[in-house]
Length: 257
Image 1 (cartoon, rainbow, N blue to C red):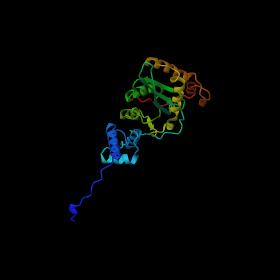
Image 2: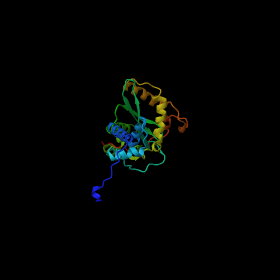
Image 3: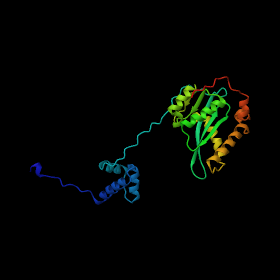
Image 4: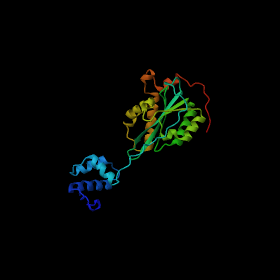
């Protein structure tokens, strides 16, 4: 018998197999964002026993696989100075970061915190609905006029802090930057410790109905923190008292715009 005259009889899938495949295809088309393991769990929830491996194979045969998300590469700032382990004098190292809260009438707001690591003095708590790199620069310009420029500034890699225009402006004012490693908040421990106190002693105890009320209450709390609240790390002195004992070192203030 010639081979061309002989055929294998195709084996048709059984009814249960067809039901499984149809359920996998239907759920995959209805939920195109879900992966094979989640689709398998949904099929089993419908009373059909199927293994994850079988679901993966069906989706592969039907070209229904979901490509894995690409790894997001976050922007990172370029550190321009080797930061000392500990600030040795006033305005040696400043640190800044954001903390978030909401008003009762709706809407979130951000607070830009700037802290002197040596004196623990809170130089600014700027409250706005949105704070970009331009506003960060405005706040910094005002602080330099009031306190002089710091030697270093420590921050995370937030987009407001790594913006090119802000980095260029800091370089013009001879302020060296030090960006912590992504996902390492302990490297910015001073501001994280301050935010813990700020949250417990102010934000978690107050209800802000409007943004204006939040600015007023937070401003009053900053004055209390600097002039009334004693700090164990400062020998039970307030940051203002400790700062008065350690005047600024002679350092010209840059006027670069």
